[in-house]
Length: 595
Image (tube, rainbow, N blue to C red; front, top):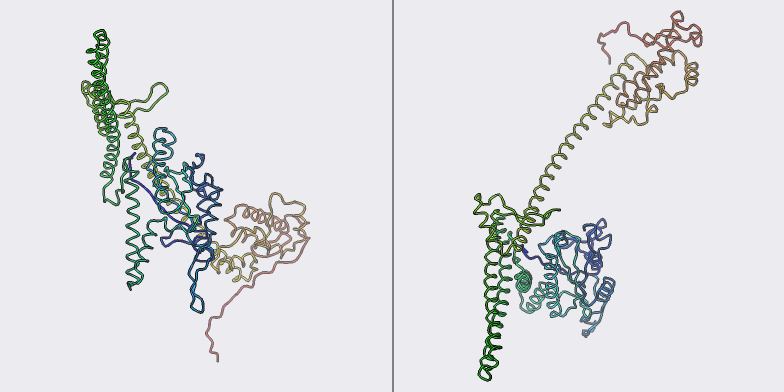
């Protein structure tokens, strides 16, 4: 196991911190983090739906290591009871008499203690590798026992430990309460140290700023001591580092080598412990051999007939010694093979070969393997005594490389996504510019048509006025109302009843026909952004133009001439003449003097 230790503690109250304003649901601590309530912490431990949106789906449920309670329901009841205890406080009456009174614990007083210990082990890998899972759970159990001893020594009660398997890294939450006092500040080493400084400074007339400075220093020292104690008692033998690369100002390469060295030291410690156990076993066996030899010698003196039996036992003892020596040589050869194999994996002379359908897992030559066949054979023979251990090391090394490659691929995908997002933003800005240009062009066309109409004393449709007003307000004209936007225009769609169209045309005078044609033609030009609406007005223009030819009405000149009608019968329906615009024959531009 490689990496550095991670341990954190916090205390929570029943109320949490008061929100900053009505728009905030929760308050924040001084460091900006959300001030969770005690019940919200238990909800997150239990993985209730509203408190577990950050977890990975389809993972095992939380695993409980019981203490005073073994389920979340009892933990909730115990926390509520601890937060409801009555505490004593000194009271001075109006007459100066002093006494002790009781009151319920403040709602914002810390009433539950929670620490978390996380391992540098991905949960997914631990679930796939039973050996890694077993070693990780044992290390978490050691962490729980270490915290339980410290909590009970401080006067608290260890309630339970909860292991979460549904987040990226494997970790355990350790929960404690103080049923008698309710408050759990003394279970927090930093808070307890700071409180002692404040109590000791009473009567010394020190400035408040100096007292706070001393208290903060004591807080930091106590928390560092807590971390160091965790490292000495739990994480050192596991091969983890006390601090990470950022604290030590190390580069990534130095930190990687340091992690590997710590892991190798942990493995060396395990091998050394195994060799010591083996040495003790050999010593015991040698002692037994000496005892047997003494017994044999004594029996040889006592009775000659036991000589054969003594010789046989002596031979057996000699064989045991030979076997012991052979085992010692085998252990040394295995240690040398492990050293050579791990070095070859790190130098990429050999690599891990995953298990397939037809072949078990094993090793294969890497890119830096020796080119000569004889050298390859020597390397294979050297690591053969520890082949299984080298495979396990190569498997972990390959997993680390695979994770680094996945991280690089994730970064590349994020870069591509950012580029795609920038392209979409550029396209969106281009579309907005096109719409703005189209709206400007639409307003310009509407103003030109209205200006021409006023100049010629012609009727300007109401829809055109609406568009001009929208453009003058700086708004985009709304064409979503369709035909209703141009009430003076005449639109004909494919679904329109022909008989109804004919009745409308029969009731329309020649002047009304000319006005309707002008409004419909303007509506056709102004609705080019809506193809369906423009098609409706285009059909109306053609229908009105056809009706004008049938009656003999010249829509351009505004004259009615029945002799030019294509259908004399239609020409007699209405005999009025469209109003012709007043034309200025001569404009007098002489300047006149006025008062």
